[in-house]
Length: 437
Image (tube, rainbow, N blue to C red; front, side, top):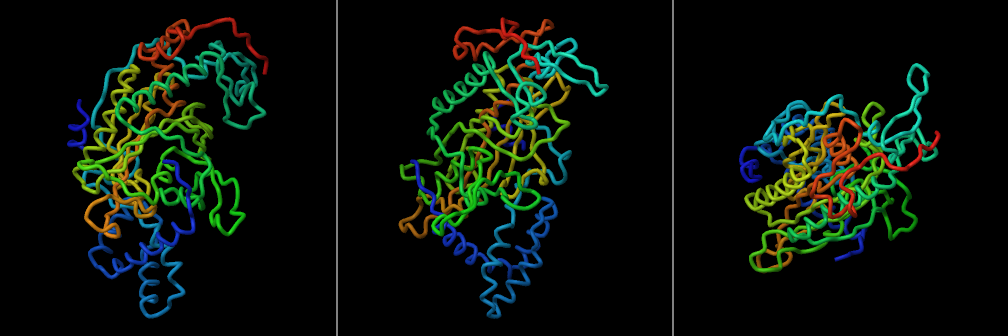
């Protein structure tokens, strides 16, 4: 099913927090008048309920009315609150909680694997302790160590790859980057340490209960004006890379695409979820697009990101489904979000391996990303930004090894990966000794 029909159915720069904050505050102040508009308030109230947002619209309206009466000291607080308003949702977005997703497309069929194993049982041969207190030992390939075994000293839910599993991680990254290069995407290496202001401008909170960001240092100088955090996704670094820039300089250009590979760091983990499904740290290839601020153009760019994802996962031999995500799953920045979930036979589930989001001008307003349109630079409109997962390595690895496992515990590698594996076409038991835990 073509990505366009799915949509129908459904360089290096320094970051200057102070200047960006002044710019963003000016933009927010210029938008305060919306709080006088009955239609805007009605639509935003509906949007906040549908997205299960914590933004306090009533407090904003109250502060704005006082600000209008001359209490100018409320401006900073009003700016802070106004910035918490989420994007509006696409008309095709289902309304409701996580279970209200809409199935758009189902690719392939589940592979018939008798008594399938999960990634730990396939890849690890470390000793285990069962709930009953009995000791046991996994009989896997011995190329994965988890926090329950060799890498206990690295903390809970940590892991280590070695031998052919490290080759496989590298192969997935190289394959994905090669495909982004062939697609004409500009490849960028972005920092993994970012000012909180960049992350917040992308729509990810760095404080509060919903915060999943590792904060590593407070601002030490007035010039920094923002604490530093570990990046949760390459999208953050790429968005910061595009900040304060004007795109669309070439005649006829409708969009510019970027890709990066980075380490991603997140607080979120759940003990009951599989080890490689949700971790504190993982590698990921990310796709980022800056487009002309035209909904039709953005839809085409959105379709091209999803098509890229579909083709990659199909060539890896995965069975997957494509979902239009509901309002509660959009977060603050996304206007529309499409997830791809792969079948993971070892768990008997479909698990998310990628997402694609159209953020319209939510991020560009906050980061001053503009599109060259018109004769006066000060009148250039804000561009649209879109992003998508190229390859989230740990999740792809889990789906891949569980899908292509053999009854004897070996794993057949898809042909598309062979050129990147130095002659290895199958993962199987070798001469790697078990390390006692």
